[in-house]
Amino acid sequence: MRTFVDHLQREIVLTNYPPKRIVSLVPSQTELLSDLGLDTEVIGITKFCVHPKEWKKQKVIVGGTKQVHYDKVKQLNPDLIIANKEENTQEIVQNCSEIAPVYVTEVENIHEAFRAIQDIGDLVNKKTQAEQLCAKIQQDFEQHKEIFSGSILYFIWREPYMAAGTGTFINALLSHFGWNNLACSLESRYPTLTELQIQELNPEYIFLPSEPYPFKEKHVQELQLIVPNTKILLVDGEMFSWYGSHMQYTCAYVTNLFSQLSN
Image 1 (tube, rainbow, N blue to C red):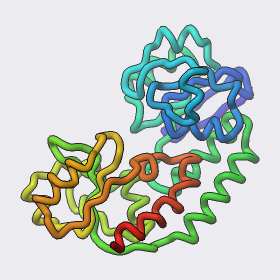
Image 2: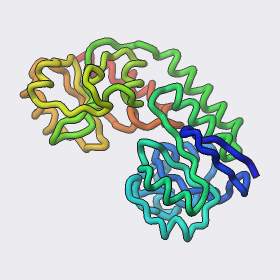
Image 3: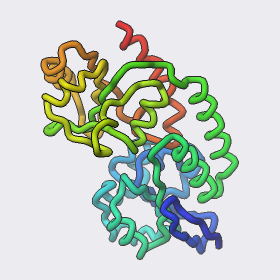
Image 4: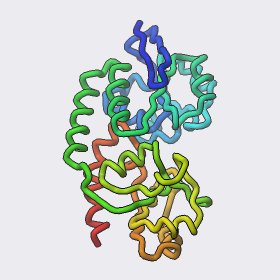
């Protein structure tokens, strides 16, 4: 038995430690569990947990990040359920807590992302592996600090247009690499913007990610009519919104964006 305190300061008691039956409700944390070598221990994931690819066929799909099938979770008889404050609802955490201990992470910046890797590593008895992974990513991020400049808007939705603003992991990444996120001037973590507001902000760059809204080339053209002088780019949403072990790919991806932005 071991007791942990999660990121919401909730006390989590694991009767069975290390946990042998884990359900993950967060795609990026599912990938982390895989990279920590927990192929056997993870038994349930969401339909959005696309990494590693083979797990979609091997594990029980317990629903999505916002709608969980509690009966499926209960049938799995988990020792541990791993969730996230933003990805999952409070109702999901409460209902799942009646089934098994639920450890909730909160990741709004890079420091908290590193903390989550290490904390989850300790939680699943993979502390050394988590520390090594964390050190590798931290070194990479230190070598790629403020490599860009310029004002930017990073949209996460369309109809209405919504951007990632202050207090989000996306903004933390943008700031780390040197971009000035104009959405931080608006009073919301994910502010809604009208076409007029976009024109008034007049960003040098706009990023349109592949998720959560699947932006396509037609949306680039749509926005180009609103801000004709802005450089608009389709980007891989996972690279900007997935924390955990996915961060080991972020710096290389962002560096490759440089050539596109320079054209």
